[in-house]
Every structure is written in C-alpha cells, then in structure tokens.
Length: 174
Image (tube, rainbow, N blue to C red; front, side, top):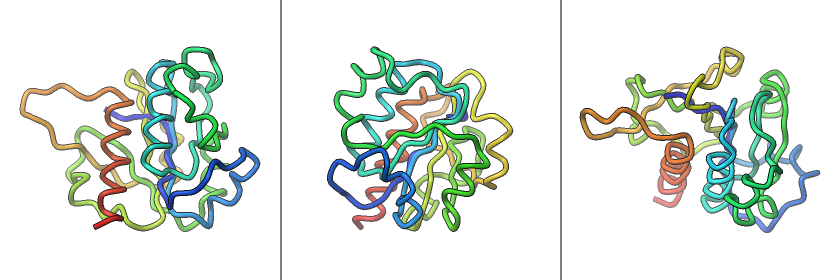
C-alpha cells in the first residue's frame, strides 16, 4: 500500500500560522499526503501528524478538501496546530531541498524500524486505492514498510501514517 500525503516530522512548536509553510525547509520533518480521498483518513492523518510533532502537511492534487466538514471533525483541532498546503510534486521538491523522502510501500525491503528517520524527512502517505501516484518519483523517495503479522493485507492510510510518524518521533527521542 502506498499512501499519498507528505507529513513533515520535526521539532515541537506552538501552533504555527499557515503562512509559515516556507519555514519548513529549515525544520526537520513533515508529511506529504498524495491522493488521499477519504475525508476521515485525511482528518485522522492530520491529527496524528500534529500529535507526533510534524511541522506541516502538504497535500498533492487529487487529495480531498482539507477543510471539508468530515475532515475538520476527524482532525479534532489539528488544523489549528499544523500548516496545511496543497501543491504539486515539483513544488514539494523545491520547497524541501535536502530532505529525505520516505514512501510507505507494502512491498519495500527496508522496514520503518531499520530506516534512519532522525534527519530532515518527509513521509509520503498515498491513497489506498491508487497510491501516491507517479509524480512522487520526482522526489526520489526511499520505500519503507511497516512490519505486520503474516497474512495481513494492509493498513489504511491513517494508520500507516500514524505508525511512521510516531516511529520517527521515537527515533528522535532515543
């Protein structure tokens, strides 16, 4: 499964205004959501990103409206703590030079426990049905998987994003 969002994971900070998204190139982590179409998943991902200390959430074209009522309800206030911006992959690449991009990919060889998630990073979470799309290849992501019990099909986008964000937080606090 590939998830289509970009979650930037970094230091804890007070509720930043959306106009501060440009500052994230100096920060350490974020989240990119590519093609997340389910409003409940998007809101849950935003909530997890804020709770894990992400610096921003970047949404690619085709993602659901981050301010739709169901997204707002499931986000539980994350919109006030996390800058959210929609942009294409070229804009993301230009905004985050020097960042390491990690793509949630069910078939990846590298597990999230083996990956070094301590540096400047962006976690890419794609939509369940179509993944993150081919445009994400322009950021040259490292594919990582979440180890799961045998015969498990996959995690939904919100669950996968939460696991990766909190694994990055765990590594940074170790």
